[in-house]
Length: 309
Image (cartoon, rainbow, N blue to C red; front, side, top):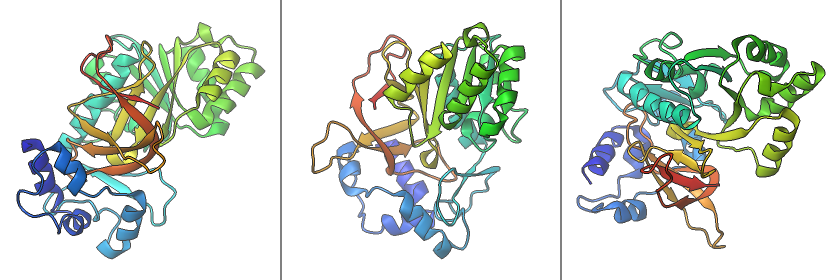
């Protein structure tokens, strides 16, 4: 409850949440159940609609009196564009989540890792302190890995193959919309991908590779493919565990709910609250991802929050 109260007090300094929380009276939110019942979810459309009213792309969620150190455009097809602002503490909290994802993927000290994504993706800008100003230590710095980053435009797949051939990363992170172009290039050069990397991790913002797509690419490429879920508006990352095949994330970094729907479907939209985001708080963000919450207990992360999608 202390964490919830701190979050609500901090978020109330931002224009968007100040309006959304106006109806909340002292003592209304007493526990997680009342938090879910009384605090309304926030939709992507609300963020986009509020931006012009708030005199700037950052101000809907930007807390008054806080000075961001890093600003990144979010990968959403909205007009106007949306941004997220982070300070050193935000970056540290976000990096800890990415480090956890890397560990689940099997990365350890001395391993090489390649990231084939845009520079504004958290997979890229959280990778190393040499990539991002004000980032004290990235996931690679914390784990002792050697990171190589490259822009993820599909027509640059020949460069991705060169990275694979000469860097030989243990794990290769790639946007899932670039998988086809990579597979075509691998086939064109008649390479055996397993000679160069142990696994691919396919990532996308508020979207996941389907089971059928994954199976098809695994047959074409000959290496296992795991999925990493990004929900950038909530600064959320979850990695598919190679053992239980569910998405894992840090329970002390997020509170995740599912929003019940009238059709009583097995999977419902995920609602994410971020505990570490200070400059741009995320309170009950209603994502475009459907899933269900599962009990903790996987040996790879006994205390992790687990999500089936």
